[in-house]
Image 1 (cartoon, helix red, strand yellow):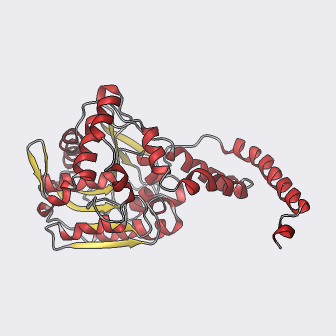
Image 2 (cartoon, rainbow, N blue to C red):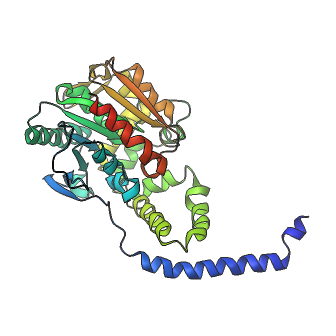
Image 3 (cartoon, rainbow, N blue to C red):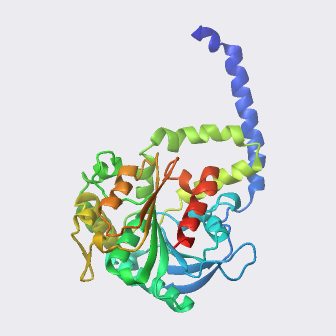
Length: 356
């Protein structure tokens, strides 16, 4: 039976078909053109060092948002924030604009050797705090809404705990809170690494090194199978473009400022100080119990980087009585770019914010 399935004639036909698809694919890939870093028009409203604060323009031409409280998106340091705006029909940013939010985003930029000694305090009580103050002044409000994504969600929780008077509502998306849950593979890996030796030796931490680590959490899928599967879509220009958008984002990984990286790994992944209430940045204690504003916690059921258990732990530690969870049926990447995400995630976040 197996021999019949692997007959020379069948192998020849499959190899021939495969090569024909590859040949057609070369033409398709040449026609794709430049791959953008985000698709929604935006304007720079504040800049400091490598960091830029952007305001997104409503694609429908509306100059004023229905929700008068601005929404600030804080993304992770380890990847580029245009994942939230990768393509027109599957953009978290556009979805939020459509719900009436006035959307701003912090772009952390690309750290270089001059940023080697930036700390968590510099990022949270420095850059993030000044961005919040810019929005408060621009809009004449005492507090803003904040959406923290992945590591940016952890930063946002720390910020809200230290500056609760400046945050009206906080939304966390695929955000690690408890870094010692039993199903957190990344946390188990990191605990075996001498982070102090790594930072002392390298200074800034290579984005390529971190990217290699993330890809190796699903090595066959992320570094092999997806390229084989790509052959099946090579005759479809739009699908190829979407694939290349994702590839650009995956491999567009900034280096990490050494000291901030050391702190984040040692204090969060190794010592789990966020849930223990043992963090202190710039003389300010980080107590999640200080978060008494409304909280919406969005997590992905099949997230291999931030398992749901690591995110859902937030409920036990915040001081608010207005706590809501939204469970998305997908993975860590799918929550940004899938068709299901566009239909479910931004409308749910927008509705929740508008009600408050």
